[in-house]
Length: 105
Image (tube, rainbow, N blue to C red; front, side, top):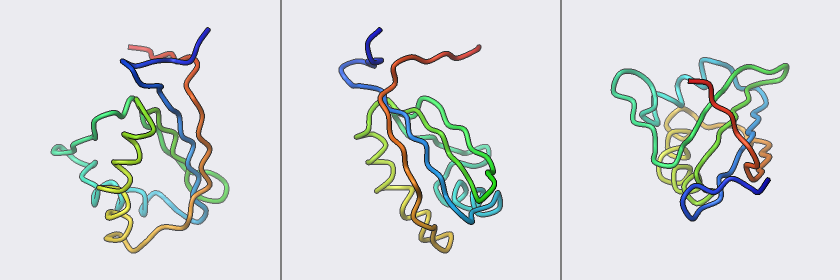
């Protein structure tokens, strides 16, 4: 099996772990980034997003159509949302190429 291609681009997974972050901070970031509520607008390129608490903070697991699309979202919307919400600690990020995926409908 080869890595998952979406169009001409290689899909990418990101595991992003933040120490000391809780649900309230995560929800504030979602609001500031325009990703919360009935008028939420998720960015082009996001395939899936999941997030929740860990023993020492918060973990986000994303799948994107490409790393370039994630990087664009990070610079244009996410980093400014971090600033507006009072900042975020530097995360530990693990990136990997998507080899296989399953999605229950």
